[in-house]
Image 1 (cartoon, rainbow, N blue to C red):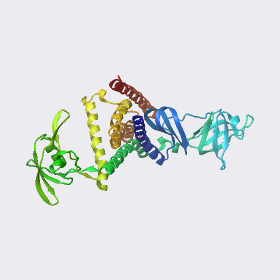
Image 2: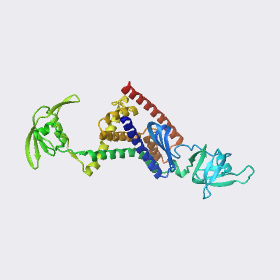
Image 3: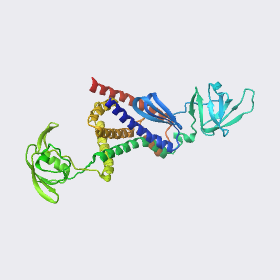
Image 4: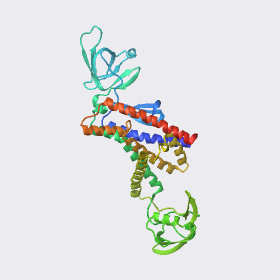
Length: 419
């Protein structure tokens, strides 16, 4: 149960912040966002706030923000339709009833001649069968169309995705991966605030009660000048010198309270990853200054970003097999292992996954954010957008291939971990 909860919280947080980036910048650009969804498939839970429906869906394989104008509007009012019109206090149409009009006895029934709900925001029609006068009704920009009792807000052109500048559209799409990187930065900062940041200095941190260091008389805060005759200046130098001498007495030259003296220490011999190394029971020096905490968030995010990009390069060059990729099942199993190590390890795992999600979404693959950004780059070069139907077909094919890859990776995970 702990693993299930951890997985749901991590997955939910990564997708939530990714989609939140899209939502915030889309709304800032004035785009009507119809739905903010975590997951795909059937709705499990939903509620509406302002113009947006917030939903949790059954399949935990991503999320989306449905923006007006990205897809053709699902409801089109054509000539000959008989619709019911309800008006607000300003005399503008704010409800257009397509069927079940008997539920709205106060509605004015109109036979539509023309309707423009994107630019002019008008409906022209006749009030009854014998009326020969064509009347024009102005429509409120936030009017809703009601069909089968379900309301769907209209999207004037200036509220649609395609109406916005290239910069606004680019930012609305890029904001998703950007939020994943920012989430990783914040998580690494939180970890550093509680645990501290390793300082790469030749200084001793906390000592274990049963280690060789404390038995030999070393103390926390001792500055190490040399080990076994070799000068050391970083914690890495100290660690490597200790590990090279398992079971052998070595001489530490340390400085404490302004005095320098020698301390003989015999590292305990242990086996790690098939190698025999020495340990003396000492941790690296830790610092919790605000500056260190702040910079740690960015340096760790940069480090893991570089590591993931290197692995992607190995995948392209064939040094990294597709069988080594993991989907939701593999991530679940890994989360189970990480959860055993403690809360802060789980936070670090979430930060690395967030970076991974940000990078994967920036790849120029159709249906992903990177694919859409690629089309924007082409638009910037051409000076005009690519035909929406052609772009939509490319994204549809890309999405189908991604789902196929997801099935292959998931099956590999199931075979690897459960069969």
